[in-house]
Image (cartoon, rainbow, N blue to C red; front, side, top):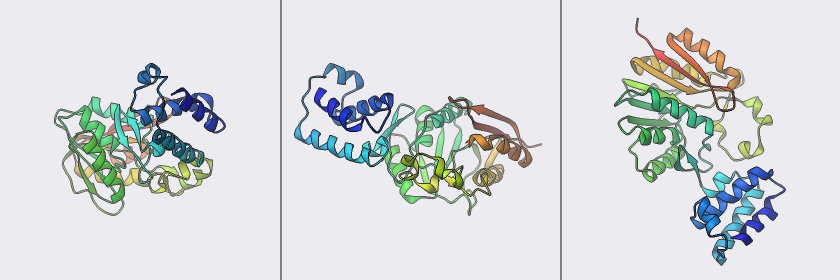
Length: 280
């Protein structure tokens, strides 16, 4: 174990800062050995097999190419669940865990939920896992993403109905719903140059970017369709770009939503919006 740790330190020290490097080394060693972080310490004198050494060399090669460690390992943690990820889907972020936590606490018993733009399925799967009383469905435009999502649902032993759907060209086929939740594409295309190469070179642009001239493209569409499929007092919960959060709130007000609440994420950015459908 010590030899493997030294090898990873030497090979990757110029790529990551020290805290990030140590976190990645723990992830790799844990994935390669099947041991928990505590297990790595207890078994620090374990000798790696030739096959494990070859796996480490492959991981190092991929990391040096700039590939995110989550894609290298083929999985990540989300709401304490293991979620498979690959270039077909975005890597779930901690901010999105906050969105799920908010949803868990506002869902009525037996709620019918739809996750729009599900990607890896992380939101829908976590919601069903944490609130098994709910009836959870999820859609995405990408059939490849839906394949990953279905595998993740199976891996985590939850029942989520996945279906292919393009929210921009088709109306939603499911109703009435108690909650629509979404983390849609929201980054203006012009911001791509400011982003880390790890993101732009490896994560799917289809799930990231929107036209500069229409940054609320998905929110406007989702809001209007939500009014037709949400039940009375049904709720819309979305993750948003921090620079367009206030603009999104105003749009939802214009569309007729009420009790709109804007929350900041753990980094202090305005990131999540809840809105309620009210019938007067």
